[in-house]
Length: 113
Image (cartoon, rainbow, N blue to C red; front, top):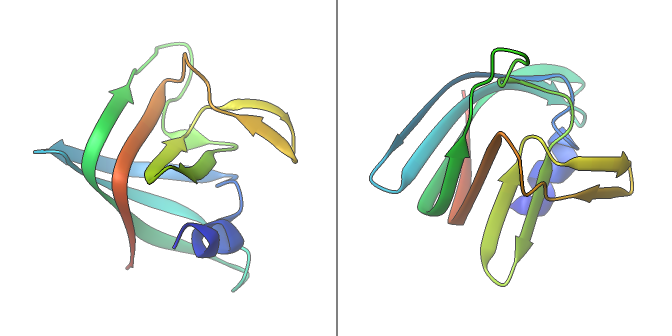
């Protein structure tokens, strides 16, 4: 699942988070983004279950829902999606310990609208 998401949506460049809901260790993120495989913009829902970390900080100085690059990875059964990673270049993106929006969970599904 992770590899297919990365293939289709790469680093979530020019993505816009339209809405998100977080309750009972489940998070739904409604997002509009470009699908590089189909060469079209899409609306999808990212469904995270068994949330281990959910951090969202809204700042007046920056828009916390417009994404230029995101980090999606899985290590030791933990899925991390960092919407504001440390970006060095296309081959080196790292998790940002001070990220404004990051989720860690045990399960991720994608729902295409």
